[in-house]
Every structure is written in C-alpha cells, then in structure tokens.
Image (tube, rainbow, N blue to C red; front, top):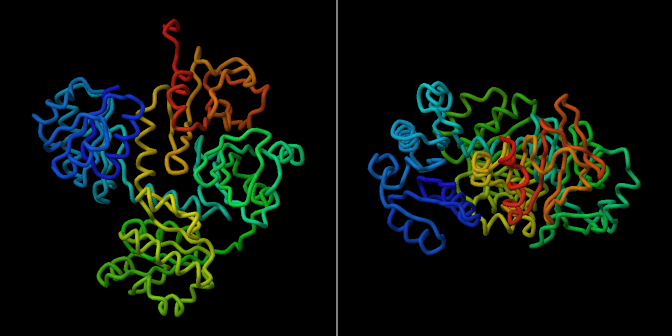
Length: 455
C-alpha cells in the first residue's frame, strides 16, 4: 500500500512510524527542513521537501499512484487543498484531512462527495474530548472505548491493593462468575503487555482491559473489586477547545462543573456560552486557588491546557490535595508512559485518538474501527467477517489464531452480543472485535482478507 502523509508533526510522524514498521510504502511531504532532518534520522521513509498544497509537490510524491492521502499539517486550509488536488488530479481511493476549526467542522457540506469528498476528517481536540467523556462516565475506569455502535464496551481498570481479584488466576474468575458477560483481553504490567490466558495471575498495579456489554459495567467494577467514590463534581483546568467541548457535553449530562482558565478573554468567551458551569479566571497550578475552590471535594479533576508539563503538575497537585480521579492531557510518549507510576489516574493523548481514527482506513479487510491502547502496544480492530476469510464457519478453538491476539466479542447481524468461548462460530456478516499486539497486526490482516478464489 502506498501512503502519502502531508505534515510530519506529532500525528503525521506517528502514522508514518507505524506504517513503515509494517513495511508499507510511505512518502512524507514536509516544508520544515529541521523537521525533515529529524524524521530522516529515525524513519526509513521517502521524504519530500515542500508544501502539500502544491500540485507539483504532490505529483513528485506520486499522488496518482497512491492508495491513501493523509493531510495532517497545522493548517486546515493546506490540508483541505491537498485533498482537493489529490482528488482532482488522480484517483486516490481514500483521502483523510485534519480539520480543527469549528466553523469548518460545522459546515459539513464541504466534506461531502461533491466538494472535498473526504473519507475521514480528524479533529484531534474533539477526539480527545470524546475519549475523556467516555472515561468519566464509567466509575473507576482509566480507559473506555465503544464498539459496534455502543453495543460493546472496552473498559480499562487499574488494580489497587484492595481489588478482590489480586492474586487470583483468570480461569478462577471465570469459574466463580460464569454468568457475567466479561472477557479480559489485555493486561498492561509495567513495561510488559500481556494477552492473557486462563493461567494468568492478576497482580497489584495491573492495568486490566476488559470487554463487556453496557449493562454489565457495574458488575465488572464489582467483579474486579475496584472501589472509587461516585459523584458528578468536575473541575476543568483549561478552557481551550478540549475544555470547552467537555464542559458543553458534561452540562448536558447533568454534571456540576467548574472551569479554570488563565486567559481573561477566553474565560469571558466560554462563560458567555456555557449555561450552568462556573468559570474562574485563574492559574490551575495555584494551590491557594484550588483550596479556595474546594478541590478536595471534586470527584473528577481534568487538566487540558496546551502545556503538557502544566497538565501533569496540576493533576498531581489536585491528587495530593484530595481530588478523586485525575485526568491529564498528555501527548509526548515519554510523558504518557509515566502516568501510572507518578500518580495520575488517566493520561489522554489527542495524537493517539487521531491515529486510531486514521488506522481504520489503512487496515486491510472490511474495517469499521481501530483503537490504539497502551501507548500503541495493543490495537483493537472492529471488522466485519467476510465469506471465505479464515475466521468464519469454524469454532474459535479450531482457528489458528496467532499468539498475541484474541477475539473479544462477536456481534451478530440481529444485534446480539456474544462474549466468545471455544465453541463460538463466526458467520459472514458478523461484527468481530479483535485485540492484538502491534507485531501481530499483519497476521490478523491476512486472516481477515477475502481469498482470491472467492472472485
């Protein structure tokens, strides 16, 4: 597959690194010479110096022979023009653009077939806000993702010393609670990523990823023995796009919200548009301010400024002062990997949220969604089982499924959710949710493809 990536920033670089590691044909277009040198030192990809909105540069990159164009520069206009040119001068099957400006996002006609004809437009801030909102809604969760239009939930929960499952084997959990529609699909233990089997023993500090149905979530929290106070008091530090998105959504869901924003004009802007939230002009790292606003009584504390270091510091400060679950916006991989060890409950990355959306269009097979977990170590793939693919019409125990991958759920065409067992049969048309280590993705893709003899 030939992929052209326009813009070698955080999102563009992450996609290029992932695809090049899978031996895809990747071309990066970047106009910043310093950034070009940095990419050339770390990635084995073709790099072209220039603007992605230039027809000549796109032709030099081989746009007429490409399978996907992914435009993720910092400029919405450059991204849109690049996709427009790609569509007019060639027959690029798929076009993806990062578009942040709310005015563009609300005018959806420009993305449709008669205009830009985009397959996917990315708004990193909105994607991160949606991820945070999903997490807030599940007590004790550090990560939450929806599959099959919300019929299936992925929930990540960290095991504390008081969790009842610590020291137990996975097979014992199944024996004691056979009626629960729950399957453990991955465990993150320090630097180790585990796709578990029946003999796996739960340990304190494990980040356990489970698949279940929405009505079982409360049972899941009890099953893992996670205890956390429930409540609807939320404090948001940062009134930028992510903070504003979150405040609007949380208001609709009935949460009690305080927003702290340093910039006076921005604070006035969001205060004028929010209906029930309290907006405070101030510095979220100011301990006296947090004391005045009773941070110790806050159930969920969220730091989403544009400064990652400030987000980390603020969340740590709030946690020390007695706040409940603390969520921080963090994009740098080296910071994100430290979250669980330094005391922050949840780290959310706009970069990974964007990458997950893009990978849906890169993966081979009939892919509906892709979600990156555990700093890109595990990939959750939602797909439709195709007739003659290797996963259909035989019991799961008879599949030669690669080590490092498992099936987390099957959704039948009538909407019934099956938490799979050895005798489970996958039929053509079923939605299948697969969890796999990054290194196993090519083998999974091969299993999902329709065989040539079918045609």
